[in-house]
Amino acid sequence: MNVVDTIRREQFCQIKDEIRRSTDYLVVGIDVAKHKHNAFMGSATGKSLLRRLVFENNLSGYCKLLERVKAIKAQNAFSKVVFGIEPTGNYHKPLARHLIKCAQHVVLVTGVAVKNNRELLNNRWDKNDTKDAANIADLVSRGKFLYYDYPSGSISQLRQLLSLRRRLKKEEHSLRMRIRNNLLAQYFPELDPFYKACERESLAIVGWCLDPSKIAGMEFDKFFLMVTRSKRGIAQKKRLEKIHRLAVESVGCRMWPAVEFEASLLVQKLNDVRRQLDQIKDLMEDICRQFDQYPLLLTIPGFGPYICARVIASIASPWRFDSGKQLLKMAGYDLGASRSGQRSDKVVPVISKRGNSELRYALYQAAHIASIHNPDFVGYFTRMLRGRERERGIKTKMKVKLAAKLLKIAWTLMKKQEVFDPAYLYQGID
Image (cartoon, rainbow, N blue to C red; front, top):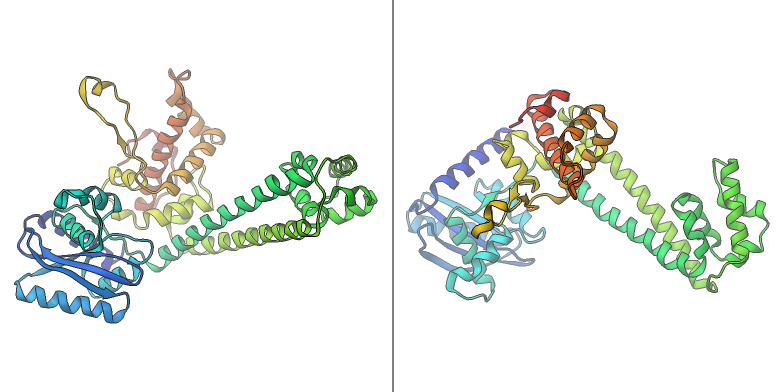
């Protein structure tokens, strides 16, 4: 953590401790929009000073906001100012970063808190920009806010690439399903059972000659050379011979030129998306190598380049967290339960899932791989299951517990600058 981040975090902790009922703070709640933002200004004691200030999402609008804040601060003898922002898409980022660069205190108010607090303001559920800005200011004045993370350039790039990778992965899956469930299901259903085993060959068939009648009228040698590009082995040849025979008696619908165009276009798009994913993988690896913690995280069983990148991007600096409990809350691995009445003692707590879902998924995959392939983790996982083997869903529950353990181990290695030691599995890490 650099000096600026350390100072900002210390200031955040100070604000969190002393803002309630303090007469020193001017609280500015900002309802963020795409083109124009709404601001509300008041004291931490609940006094309204400016109910509505509309300013544009540009430099002149930001200057207008800061000038008005400066004037109200001087008129009411406030010594400190804190800006509360609710994240709305990515529209809040330019404003928040400008305020941070101007040495202003910026805090984050979650959308869940804003929604739950809206009706408490005046006992009405109606929503408008002016009320939302006042709602945000009210939450800030009561200390109901979070630290606004302002990551370094490398962390910001890594998060951007991970976000892009997630969108491309969704697009890749969508294209694969369109090819299988739309094209193959209609025009060559006999090819679908071979798709998973030989996807490259199946895509070549879809892209070049999906029409079964054309395949049936084609010599096998020509078909074989058209579909294959490498690894022309005996098993591959037998598989393609079977596909060639099935094309003769295919029950698929008649192929039209428009369908052939769609097939070639979808295959081309799928190949382009996969090339882009490979480029993103290389870029993420180059960025991760800038961090000293990257080779240390790779020593953890189940951790590959993607999972290491996801952990580094999520944790950023290990010194942001004072304890393992804070870390688990960030990921959504903290436990919670609804306890009430006579059965409160029998309620089984579950993970909150209020944190980073992408991180949870990545860690679960790491726990799954480690619990199968690594001897130390296999023994530890077996010990966790002992006596509960017949319990329904216990393997999934224990893998989630192991994933939370892996997160704390990764955090510890990042702090201590150490490689993985199997002894960490049997230690209480905090």
